[in-house]
Length: 447
Image: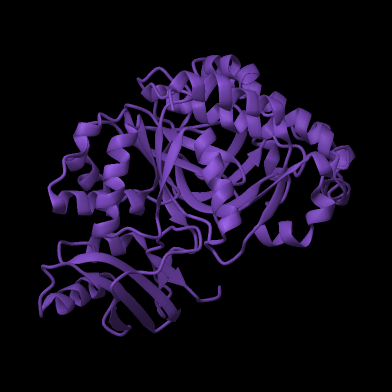
């Protein structure tokens, strides 16, 4: 489909009819990112004050919290003031869903969204059309950094619904958004070759999707000697999964275009987006992002903390100091790209993504990518079901040899010690999550 038709005759009219027209917000958001940081903070604080005032009068859950803590809406005026309020967990949302809802909103006019449930807890939440439109406008603001515009053709490496009804619904959505979908559930040499023929005919402007799915596609393209540079992509945008060095090495080898890291969630939309200078800019003109230590205090720049989000544009089911489950580092670094939105140094991954030893040591699951990912291993996944035992699933590559397992075990024990039991299981393919993501590490241990 031609870009003009996709943008002006399909996407924009449909968004308008749904009450999710992005056009009223695009210019404002475009200008926000170039304002001095003190002005961006003023915009954020004004939105926070308006939100707090509204939910105090319209959300039973938050009114009870304010009254119990002898707080008034005027006591919350900036991110520092937010520390007067407790954080909000997924469990608390599930247990207080009805009381969280904003009584001023008609529930029949709201849209239901859900998280992927990769941590074992699927969360359903409500959003009003305006909030969804702003989230969408934020996305297009970021994509514009790479000259990607509404209507540009996208190849989407994503999950595919199981039922035919939902598959048909996603097919229609893909048509409207001028994109084709590559199933993250079927990344094999034969399927990737067929999909490449489809992609080449489609002539996309950019790739978007799960890091591991795009990586798997590139792996087989490289094996088959297919040059992906002939696609002339504007960018490859990776999301939903952390991009590790071996991913980036493959992408840089296969693409002569920017490789972009996107960090976001179903609940909030984009939280941070990577600019052309390689920095992750926080969308702090429409959300408060905190990085907290174990005592719920803000960490210093460069220190690792729990990421806590306050969505400033979604009033229907307000999420104040929401524990999104990820770890990251704030930064005072200034970027030369021209965008003045603040920077997050890295995203470490979920707080559940730590291997634990009986001595109390915590080893981040990212360690696995530096020990298990080599030429002899195509895919891997580790489970910890017991404090003394780890199970490693591996898909062998052609270079896997008789002594590879002992080499891998020795590497693991460098950080994990000699007492822990490590077992290996060999599969043809690592099972994906329901969403299509590949989680490298799953812990079944309770805190």
